[in-house]
Length: 115
Length: 111
Image 1 (cartoon, each protein chain N blue to C red):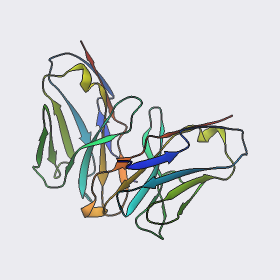
Image 2: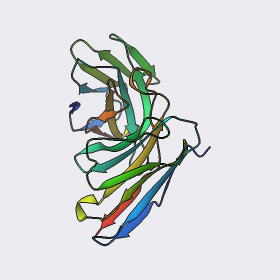
Image 3: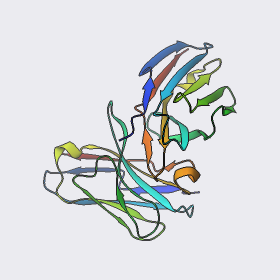
Image 4: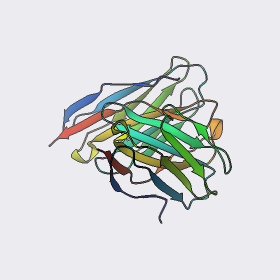
């Protein structure tokens, strides 16, 4: 059972380079999320997608773009990477939202270093 | 922006001790409170989802309670074991599709 799959697991970038983190889920969930995890900061929401075709900003969206390609896939793009974007990125999915929000299922994380 | 606070930040207990942590949140705009367990080098995994004031959930030696009127939830671990060592996160959902996380309580159980 794959659940939520993220790629790549590790990436080193130079300042100014671009890259895309890929995420796919096979649980037929409507909602998908991108979080970043930094020491002492917990999980902070970057962007989310409540359903196919919609995306919304979270707490820390600056410097990122997202695409909900279809119901399964939700990608996160860094157009011009900065050292402040060095972090561990987690993709997650859930069924429903608001009052019907179910538990989040997380991918294994992607560790990104920007030099 | 909703503020979800967890205390303590970290905790060391001896094997066999019972312990508890707190998650505090704004009592208005509450929909659901989630608890997750996050082991080092792994992904967070859900423990409980609670929605009603007075909810109590239990899974083995771990249990949780919810007070939506005063805005807090407690997570209890009875008879802590080394394998309970992890970061315990709570998250709030309220009116949108966002899950807002606290910064977590890092538990270390000493053998």
